[in-house]
Length: 80
Picture 1 (cartoon, rainbow, N blue to C red):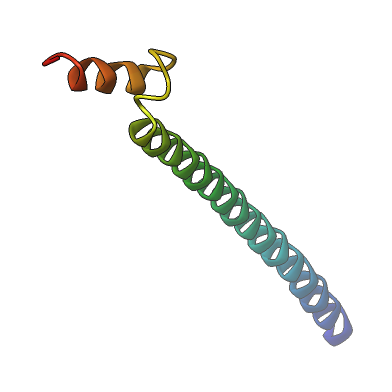
Picture 2 (cartoon, rainbow, N blue to C red):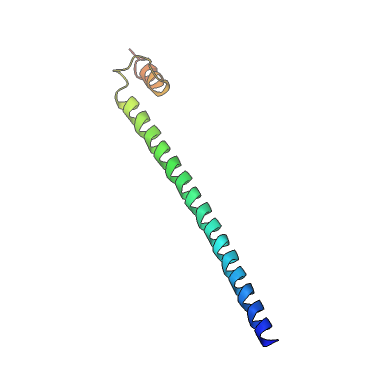
């Protein structure tokens, strides 16, 4: 009886450990994926921001090539 109990306890502890480990691995994987998505979003947003700033400052050089440029170009040269 004692050995049976010990064996059951051992099996349950192993299964609990595996369950816990898998759960934690899944949670950490989800965190990692979210972090990657966040990183990708921040990178793409900053690249877009840099592009808009570049277009803003080089608006007279581009003649109606992109949307921010054309808007600013028309606003800047509407009083000519």
